[in-house]
Image (cartoon, rainbow over all chains, first blue to last red; front, top):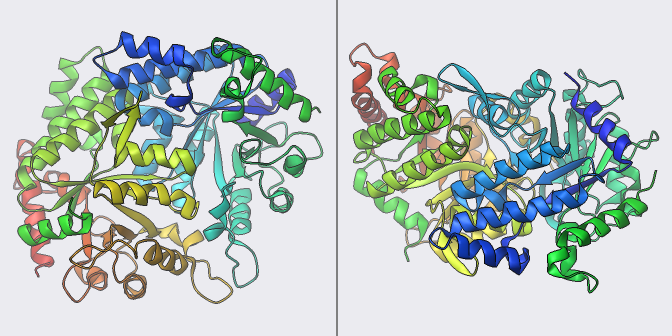
Length: 307
Length: 307
């Protein structure tokens, strides 16, 4: 069984790209022809219509970019919001992306303790025990985790990573304006809260390093605070950074350069809306060409991160 | 539209009970006769068998306790772990509890920012936009929220609470042993992290106080740290505390007394395993009497919190 970080880096080498495509399918931004078709087909069940529209849209995006990127990141809120049908759309999206050779990172920010955290870890990364039988459920390659509850909330995920060759990305410094409310608090020895989180994370991931030198315990580090990412890179030498905030949230390629190590690895840069809904900002493409528009947006982004 | 805190306190008065029953249906602890029946009925679909066993079990618990308690708290991880069928079981449980006049608090600890947090808030507390049509999804009365991302991550939930008469419970100091890893860090002015969180929370909830004097922004405060709850009660005078950690995690009625205000309100005390799986520790009840065992456990707990 290959270590998660080695699997990820192998795909980064193969695609020559560290881009993560965020599959955040806001229903209202999906091209009209897809909305209309599914709305008419499933008139009696609006949640099913939404779920099927999402899967059709996502398949078009995945078909257009799978050879260019190592990993995709579905944001589970945009699926869960349509209930059971939405979760079926999430499962179908995960399956399709995996069939196309992509790694899948579930952006779920799950967090709990004890047997509850074990339940999440088994559902997303491992196998679920159903009447003594072991069954895979979501079976994604990695998940985002919120560690406000401390190590108790992280340990079950780490154990699932070890056993099943999976990864986690723990929120350290998020990209949003009010991330500082809690994360920037200074402790009495002048370390900021996110630095303490980074030190914990470096420790939690220290025992399981892949052949490429990286841990399966990664960090979410927003692109919007370049000085912070430089500091965090120095604390967490072996963590792969998942970097949100590029593009739509205002960060540039220059802002994220500190997220990488000298080996050129150590970060995946996420972009969601700017890629999957690129057709909305383009005069070049019709809405039926939303996949081509997404492909062009990825190619443009790859050029900015050439290595 | 009634304010969430008024709805909750009305039910506490009516039932003369501040107990919250945690519906954490670990499949392996569900009575054998329920497991067996559903396993045989849905041989081809183990997740469906699990989901249906959970619903049958939960209905038995709800039937046994609905006249004794104001609120139940399904832990969503134990449903989500069985995928689409698990989410259907969650929905069916929520519906059944509401039909029995119970409030329902989804323990989901969701957290994100911007449109993603809006998606969660609309799914759990509000209405989801499906092709321009507004449709209720989970429609629970309240949800737990992790606020590590700051106010950006809380605001969409607060707006949904205002609009739909719902509530949130924000993690402040959790009951688990390693909750201190982050939550107990001291800032340079010697306040601990959870105290800062409490001050934020008091501010976030200050503008929307119900007739009984409480906010719809509540706090999760573990029962396992009595000195901390005393301190937190003094900071968050208008927040209703959701108190986990009683019973199975070791806290006693004496440990949680500081969670209440002088009016006798201000807290709901959760117990999960000790109630719903009470039949396993009892020689008095057969497994078919798991409901009666749960009822007796609730009655015993109510006596400890007589007011």
